[in-house]
Length: 71
Length: 567
View 1 (cartoon, one colour):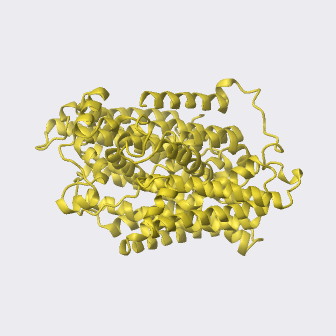
View 2 (cartoon, one colour; view 1 turned 90 degrees about the vertical axis):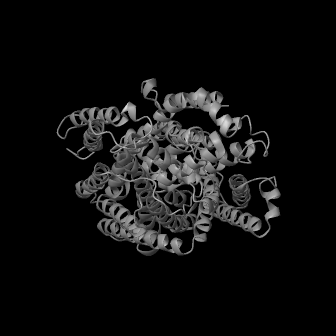
């Protein structure tokens, strides 16, 4: 790689982080305001825990591959 | 490598909430940001067309797989799984894994050591200019046409799934791809493909997880499929003893010799769309590891593609039908199975991510087509046949412009297909004509030093013409199917398998005959190109867990176990 190139894994971390935040937020909103026509298995609140998984992975990737950090 | 898809029901399957729209828009912003960021790192020809040959094995391997993992591939094979059952998995396992491992261990050293920038470029080094011209022109022509067909199909999917205007989908997605590939070249395409690969998994993985929970696990799923469809739908091999015993109408010889031995090897080892990603690896070991990493993930893809199709057989309250029946009844067709499952389990946020996965799949496939076209056009057609001695900067500029022109031709093809739908079938057939013979030519070139330039050219031409001839024969006289596909009961896919096998055999036979009638090249001219006269670096110094052969063996063992489990 060229010197100080931002690794692709950092961009992936940003993507997972932002998507995770948005999906967890939407999931919590749905818990507070249950939709009139919920999806199948709504009681599992998949958007909360799946969003949380993406968010955590995003944080790990952003920290691990942050620009300037030795990989 | 994917079943033909057509969606003609102008209904809207899902409705996006504001948070879904934000997720989709954020995705477009991020891929464009990556393109702009990488613009300054694509100044030389080696940077623009080969990503500087600096990619790690992981980046090259995921990109290698992602370029193939288009959204139509996802939706098409999910539909095939609903229609034909687990047999569709053959296109992911025996129809991919052995070929990828073969590329890694046997062919990659010659591609990499020869320092070629493309597959037609290898043919030039091995067989001469005429073979390169034939292969480059056919590849460039077919690649932009296929890209246009995929673009139209994707716009149609967005119309059916989201109600988006077809023109909006075509122009927004194609211009985005044109911008980030023209700016950052192959490096930008590869970076975005890795991002798209992750998003495809993030968006699609939840469907099989929740589906298995709803179905009550794999054992219960099999029972429900046996009740709703047939117990044959969950067996990979045990129904392939006869053309009539399985929903696909195919025999195991077609799967093994046609699909695995010819079509799959031809696609995964000589289609420059995927091989280009591996050529960008930073060293030979990374170039060998990249297809092995790709193979490991390819084995998992049926989990997000085939399993949703099988789950739909068990859990969907409606029965999906063929396109014509769906239009007549106002119901849903097989091709809508993945969006239907997405809408079944995914609420706000997750739906946006799932739609982003479909868009990402489309864009990774299109970027793969466009970047491969750009390299072949610039190096193997423009530089080879029109302007041999221009400075490097001129070819980079040509690469950027040909990216934009390639996208515009694809857009034109998309509109052409919109007006004349039958073009889609013809172009998909045309593309298949070149793959099997090209594999015959390349494999003989790499493994048999007696093969000569005229032998390579005439073998490639004869194989291609024989494939076209067989296709036309069956079109004009459908009863010819009993000769081409060995059975009057064979379906389209079986016909494709056997046509590929025969055209490969014709290519090999003609190449061998002409080679024996013409003068061979001296060994010194074949060094770096052919087995037996090329010094391949040994890996004795490297720990066993870092050797490609070790990981290929691991992948191979898992592949065998999976086939036995689902026999």
